[in-house]
Image 1: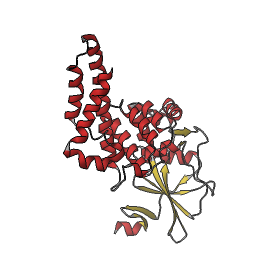
Image 2 (image 1 turned 180 degrees about the vertical axis):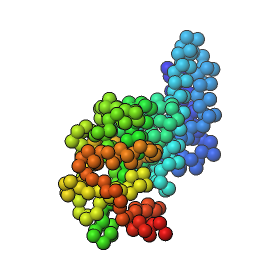
Image 3 (image 1 turned 30 degrees about the vertical axis):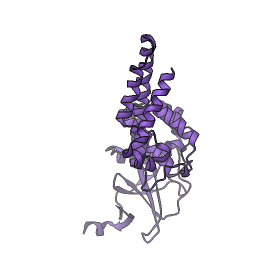
Image 4 (image 1 turned 45 degrees about the horizontal axis):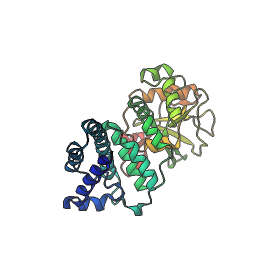
Length: 315
């Protein structure tokens, strides 16, 4: 199958020698030639195989292998370009970036089998994050991305969307602490979660993948509470709670792993309309009282959040 290697080298030489790609090569650094191959180069790759003097049976096998290789190259190209497009401005994609070359080779080899555009978006964003902060991607991420199905990816997105702020105020209504994270109110809401496509089998699968840990009954809680007044900001709605245990707040039945946090950082959120009611029911089942009225409203702005008295918000 030497013709495959020869054709590939010819295609790569063509890509590298095209003046229009000089700038691309400089910008993409370690991702070139993954994102540097042109359609002309890929067409040349298979053309060289078809026009070779191999016997017909060998040529058939060579063409099939070439087509598979081209498919992988196109997938890698798309993912590499997504990484460059979505990474922070001035991200270094050269060898000086600090990204491990062996890790990159393993990542791109697996990326070659990803054809679904929605899934490619995930791979590309993870790759871009790695170039932003080399060494930050959990070691099991390549395996997770290779094994997760679109169904479980959508379920993980719903879990990440169950996100709220816990805001603690002093007696004067001044913010002293803000926490934000995933709070999955599964306990006492199991049937509703099934309706959302989040049955226990889904949590089991996501745990086996390495994205979450979950505890169905006891659940998880915050380390401590310093504020006199505690507010929850859920889907833009502010509620005030009274704690049964003054030193902790129930934080749901699911905890993201390191890989889960990494994947959540590039996962787009969606609005789950039922979420505020699920949170209220969960909190009450954990002996946390939801006050009927609160004096305060959390205002989320581009540069942070602030707290106002309800009467000020209405004016």
